[in-house]
Image (tube, rainbow, N blue to C red; front, side, top):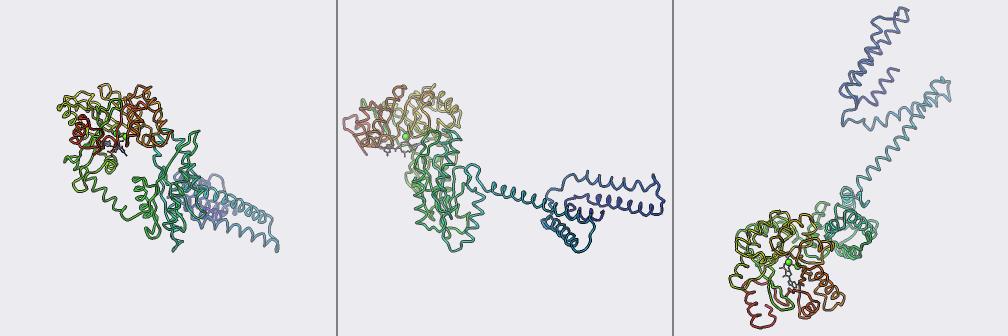
Length: 573
Ligand code: C2E
Ligand code: CA
Ligand code: CA
C-alpha cells in the first residue's frame, strides 16, 4: 500500500509538490521503515510499547506535516502535464477492467473485484468532471473572443480568425472594411452612455444581417467595426460599403429618439494591398481617415494615402514655424444688419499663407492644429491680430466689432477671460469691440466649466455667439442657462430655404425662438438675394454670406465698406 501511495503521489502531485518534496519522500520512507521494523520485531514477539521504534511513526508524520506547511499550494506556473492527467485514469481503468475480465475466468478474491469496480466507478466520475471542466474552458475561450456589449467577435478573435482565413484561402480575394461612426462621441455625451451602447448593439445587428455567411464581422472597440469580406475585390467591397452606409442611414429608435448616424469606411484589398491583417488594418485605417476628412463616406486605400503620415509630420513642423513667422493671416467677412443694411461687425476667419502651398483655408489645417495641441497659441495669434485690426479701425473712425472663433479646446485655459481682458485693455479698446463665437461642442464638452468661463467673459462686456446653431445634438436648455447674446443659424438651414417651404418655416421659427429668449439671430451662408429678402421678412437680425461678401483681407473689406457707403449695391469680389 505504501508503494501504491508513493506511486500515486509521484503520478499526480510530485511535479507540483514544490521545492520541499524531499521532506515528503523522507517522511514516507521513515514511516515505512518504522512499519517494516515493527513487523520484523513483532514476528519474534519482541515488540514493546515506548521504545525508540514508536518515535519512528511520529517522526515520519512530522516530516510530512513540515512538507505540507512549507509548500502550501503548488508553485506558480507548475502544472501537471497533460500526459499524466490522462495516463493515470487510463491506467487505473485498464487495471480495473483487467481484474474484472480475469475474474470471469479464474477465481479472484471478492476484495479485488470490489476494488476494481470502485476504480471503474471513480474513473467514470473523473470523466464526468473532466467533461464539465472542458465545457467551462470552452465557455471561457468564447468569452475571451467575444465583445461584451454586442456579442460580436472582438479584436482578438478578428486577429486569429482573419489570420487563419488569409492563410487557408490562398488565391482567394478578400477585402477588409474598417468602419468608424461619425460623431459617436456626441451621441454619448449628449444622450448618455446607455443610448450610445444600445446604438452600437443595434448597429451590430444591422451589420450582421447584411453580411454573407462567410464574411467576418468584429467590433474592434469604441465605435469601430471591422468586416472581412470573403471573395471580394474592389467593386464588391465598394458596393458593400455603399450598402452598409445606406443601411445605417435609416434612423435608429432609442429610448423614443430617432437617431441618425453615419459611418466612414476605409477599405483595404487582399492580397494586393497587404498580406497580413496588420498591414491591411493600417491601410484601411488610413483610407477611413481620408474618407472621414473628405466626407466621402467610403474609400478604397490608395498609395497616396500613405504619404499622409509623412505629410502630416512635415505640415506639423511647418505649422510651428508659421505661428512664429507670421504666416497666419485673418480674412474678414462682414455681418449686415438686415433692417438697415448697415455693417457693425465682421467675423475674423483664419488663413495660413503657406510659403509653398499658397493660401490655406481652415479645413486644411485646423484639425492638425487641434490634434497637435497648437490651438492655444493659434487662438492667441488670431486674437492679437483681430484686436490689432479692431484698434486700427477705431483709429480710422469706423469701429467694427470683430468676431473670433473659439474652439472647444480653448476651455482648457481657465485664465482665458483675464488673458483676453488684458489684450483688449492693452489696445485701449472697449470690450464691445470683441465678440466670441463658440460652438455647441464647446458648450457640451464641460457644461460647468463652459458656464464659468462664459460668465466671466460676459461680465467684462464681451459678447458671446453660438456658432453653427442647430447642427449639434445639444438640448435647448443651454439657451436658457448659459450667458449668450447671439445665435448664428448654420448655413445648412439657410441654404435650402428658397426651394423648401419647411426649411423656411424652420428658419422663421428659429428667429422667433431666439427673440423670445432675448437673443439676436444671425444667418450664415446667405448666398443669394432671395434668401436675403426672406430672412429680412422673418425678422432675422443680421446676415453673413457670399451674397454680401466673401471673407477678404482687411484692406479689401475697407474698400467694400466704402463702396457700400457711396451707394453701390451689393458688391461681390
Ligand atoms: P464658421 O465659423 O462657420 O465660419 C464660416 C465659414 O463659412 C467660413 O469658412 C466662410 O468662408 C464660410 N462661408 C461664409 N459665407 C458663406 C456662404 O455664403 N456660403 C458658403 N458655402 N460658405 C460661406 P472658413 O473661413 O473656411 O472657415 C471654416 C471654419 O473654420 C469656420 O466655420 C470656423 O469654425 C473655423 N475657423 C475659422 N477661423 C478660425 C479661428 O480663428 N479659430 C478657430 N478655432 N476656428 C476657426
Ligand atoms: Ca464662426
Ligand atoms: Ca458657422
